[in-house]
Image 1: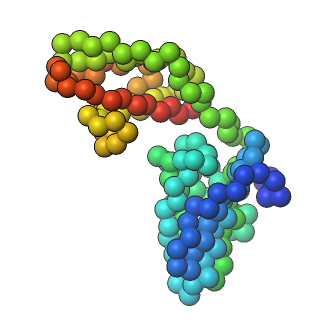
Image 2: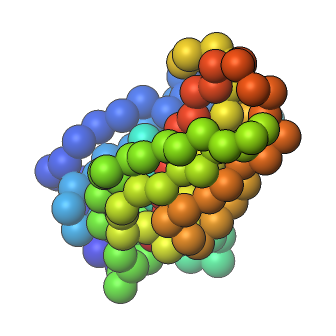
Length: 166
């Protein structure tokens, strides 16, 4: 297990009541530190999507039998009373995030839109909204770099976004 807490970016993930959690990342790995100063165990769900990508697994450096994995950008951690968790990303994982998609193209059809792009992710989630920058709903998850979205109303403006996972 690699411990590299002396360098990297810091990000607070949770600061509420008796629990404080932060992440430290660098090019080689990540760590999530959570402290509970309260008298009862606490389970918190941490938003880790800006810290590490999905499927990165962590093992607790303080309690080796405790481990967590990032799923849908989140990590659930139970922190015993009056102690903490020192979750260190397991070695041998690929921390590189997919490159941003480029060459996004959209062509309108009868009640549909076909989107295409270039990128190096293994899976893409595509979202749609009728409001720019808000209220996006997931329409599909695909491994392809092209998607036709059906069921649209002709004359209505739609906004699309997508993200990729490695």
